[in-house]
Length: 334
Image (cartoon, rainbow, N blue to C red; front, side, top):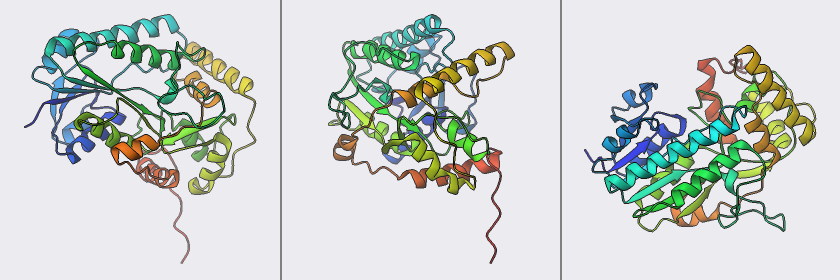
């Protein structure tokens, strides 16, 4: 078995798709997991599993032994914005642990899966490219700042090649935790989710995984690549999704300020009740501060063909309905 590629976070939403994509490229990856994590997806794939917990640096070194390339899909993802100091400290500590372990193990290439949250708007308002990166930490959003800070840490790594994948919001099969698909799920459940009308960029996680896998295995892959299928206004996206979900169109959008305030109240109420926030500040800030994106480099250099949103949505609904995310739609009358 070829274990010269290690995937950190292989048991997660995107990680499982990366494992599948690497296999399609002819690579059988070593699959890193945290000590306390669900590994059913890896078990079903009969994948080689190793303990690689970002909070246990010794496990990282052992997992990276003999590895040429590390694909890092396990970066800290803050589920709320209530502890910005603690979240940033955790993100930085984990990133430094990955770099230290990789350098000590003699890893030659590291592919870090970041986010298009680190892509800055163009002065002319046009579609942003990989070159449009914030020169300093973005002035908004804990999620934006953390992703930017982690990119800085990996970029400073010595003795190995670092490549950065920049996926936009993923909607597609496998999203058990309902992350960037939260508003679509809420709409499909008849909840008429509050939303603004910012620019959002959507991509199928399977397409992201193909891009990441090719960045891992191809010698001539670019160092920084946007992986995004389309950019559009959030209200139009939800309006177009409604008939596919069998629900009424959403109500008109609210202002950016009102949307952000609603998310902050939702997180504060969730902290009091001990439940997950119905609307996270991270999701709201991504919708408020989103910019149109140009993903043509991924198409040219990696040979990607991004699925249209309608296809990703249909596959997501097909996957999610048996799990109870949506109510099954009646079959049309003959």
